[in-house]
Image (cartoon, rainbow, N blue to C red; front, top):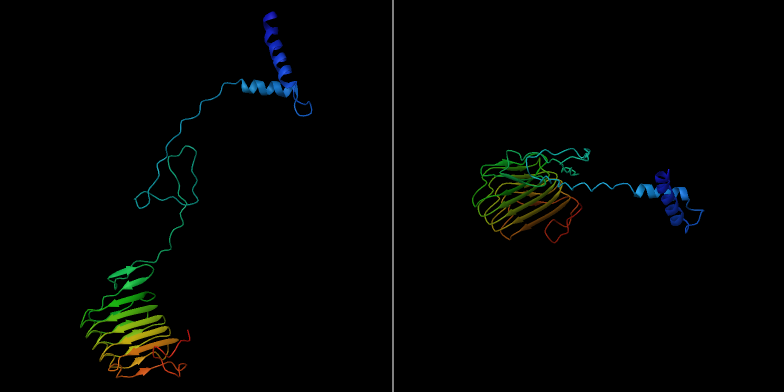
Length: 233
């Protein structure tokens, strides 16, 4: 009996001595004893930290759906990444493609811009001897150096920019509903340049160019030269 009474007496003294200094309204001796018993429990050692491998983008590793969750013991970090909208494969007609949706269009013997794409046509000197059809595209830029672009050039609903150096662009140039910008060097643009359907038009003709005439939008009564302010877009 003396052995059993000893610990009880010690706990009672510790509890009484420890909690005597605190207000009875906030703590009780019973609560203090319970807290003491909890603190006397052996503490578990911290679990060793586990290095998680980070999956690098651009590898062949599978990408999990963003809604996936990470379990406590999993060796994988789930990255929450919003995918970039798919612009589709580069059309076969293009020699290469630029994002977003720009086709570099080869045109040695004529070419057609893929529907829904913007196209860039860069001709070699005396090159592009066939028609350049951008009527289905959303925009077109055509670069015609010396003696190039002997075929017609037709643009669609988007903006159209055509640069004709000396003795180039000998067939009609027809712009669409978008903004039209045509530059004609010496003895170039020998057929009609028409931006009659365009909301804005600027046709810059050298003194010896544009012998085929220029057709401006009806809304631009003052003309459609670079200084005429023909812009209703």
